[in-house]
Length: 144
Image 1 (cartoon, rainbow, N blue to C red):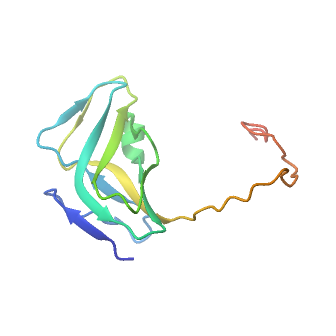
Image 2: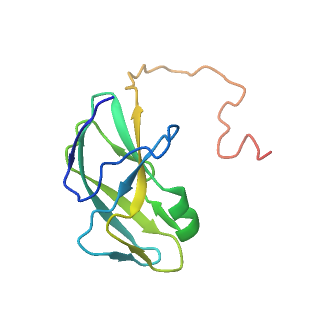
């Protein structure tokens, strides 16, 4: 799938690291390093602007290494970029660790997933079909 992109950063375009990768790494596009204090959040710009086809979304997700090693994650994960958005891609990062974390220019801060989606046409009814699960939720199926 071809997607139009403007790259105003000094970094290469996002790319897949392996043949089976689902996501492409997004890099911080910073003039100077940003220190993210414990429990603080910030928007990190990428310098990327995309034009997605209708029916396609881009999802911004955390990088597992940053999350596990440093407690850095994407706050609204997954963040959705709609097909009609034309602004710069920004990543809302939060530091869930007890230590300050320095974000440097060019650092891989998140993953971008390109995905198809459907639009719903609601059909309002008075009753829903019954299932074995019924109204059970929030752990009702057990943990084992």
